[in-house]
Length: 89
Image (cartoon, rainbow, N blue to C red):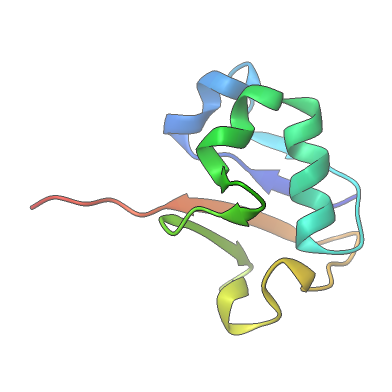
C-alpha cells in the first residue's frame, strides 16, 4: 500500500501522523484517499480541484509536475512526500 509522508505543519490535520497509508493507482487517487481520511487537510492542499501552487508532491526524488501531475501512476511500494514551499528570507 502506498504511503504519504506528512510535513510537520500539516500533521495537526492528521492527528500527528507522520505518514499515512493510502489507496489508489494515481497520485490524484492517493491524495483523494488521504483527504477522505482527513477532510480538514483538503483546503490546505487544494484550491478547488487543483493542487495549490505552493504544494509540491514527490514520488521518491521526482516532482509530479514533471511527470503526469495528479495522473501520475503509483505502485504499492511508492513513498509519496508532500513538501510545502516556504517563502521568506
